[in-house]
Every structure is written in C-alpha cells, then in structure tokens.
Image 1 (tube, rainbow, N blue to C red):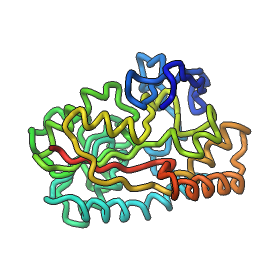
Image 2: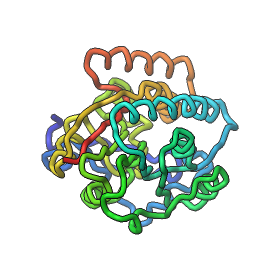
Image 3: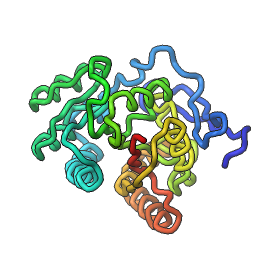
Length: 277
C-alpha cells in the first residue's frame, strides 16, 4: 500500500497543460486528483477526446475504433456469462456503441451520457440516452455498466449509492477502470496517460476498488483484464513523454505490461463484476 505521503504531480496534456496532484484517499488504495476543478466540463472540450466522437482520422483513432469494435462483443460475452435478466443500463454511454451492440443481442437497453454531442451521435444509431439517471426507478436493472467512467465521477459515494438504488437484488455492476499498480503505470509514472488529470478524479488499485464496493454491500464475483488498454495507454503515454507516438516502443511496453500481469494480475485496466448483496 502506498504511504500516506505518496504523491505524484501530473500534467493535463489534452487541454489546459495545468498540473495536478495525486494523493492517497483515506484508508483505501485509491488516489484522488487535487485540486478538483469547479468547472470540469471545459477539460473535455477537445476534438482529441475520442470517447465523445466516432473519429477515425489519425492512426491512433483507427486503432482505438478497431479495438473498440472487437471488445464490444467480448464485453457482452462476459456479461452474458455472469448476469441474469435482460435489462441493462450503461452509464457514461458515449456515442452509444455498447448499447447498440447489446440491443442487437436482445437486451432492453437504457443509457446515460452528459455530453450533448455524444448523445446526438448515439441517437443517429437509434440509441436515446438520458443526461442523468435521476428519472430511472429503483430496482430497474439487471446489469449496470460503467466502462471507464467511475474514475470521472465527482462523488464516488453518491455514484455507488445510485448503482445500489437502480440495480435489482442480485444485479451486477460492471466497472472498468485503469489500474495504477500496472507495469505500464510504474514505467511511465507521471506521464502515464491513464492518469488523464483532471478528467480522471480517482485512480484505483484492485484492493482499493474492492474495499470501496464492499463497503456498500457489493460482492466481487469476477475480474477480467482489458489487455488492449496497455498498448493504447502506452501509445498515449509515449506522446505525453516525448511528443511523439513511438508506436514500436509503446507496443513493447504494452506487451511487457501484459506479460508481467499474467503473473501479478496487475493489468493496465481491469473490469470488475460486483454483485448487489
């Protein structure tokens, strides 16, 4: 566990070039981004923020979109093998691709996405997203997914309480987040792209996120690695560090991270399946 004086200084490479601190949060192995900007929305105002677009301009965009399409099917396979029922809510649904795929597999879908442009792109695919989850009734969903979203929410307690409210008893919360104990995180340190300050307000270890959800009566039933994230994050990290993509170097570091994780389980990103007790 990091010591209480653990601290990393990271820069926002995407928008502002401002610096932020990462500090250990209480007794959890979770890091908190400080200070938290009052107006977070301005830090998402970039054409390069790819989860709010369907961009396929650059090589990085094309890699991202290609891997995303493959992983959509993989994610649904995981959920189908673990969860029961047919109603799914995706929080932070982006441009709606996950729900579009789930709908084709006969899931009854609903989604939340605060970004206006992303909601418009989702609607073009026939997926209507809500700005927030306030109007959904309690015990409504068999599955709630948050694919690289929990790290963005301003208040973890409020968000997990909302998951508890919306999930049926025995329902599954699917939470994918970066892992700051991975090899690629240790290698790139303050340049690690998955810190992505200040858009990422929280940074999780396996022990930290498990302890957090257990404190709200969720039980971890499964963990799955997102192995492609190590390559993509390494590619962005190389650019943060040197200003260049350095594709071959990123491929090497991403591969090394996955190889080490086969023994340590510390993959660059992990998907957790928590069951509502």
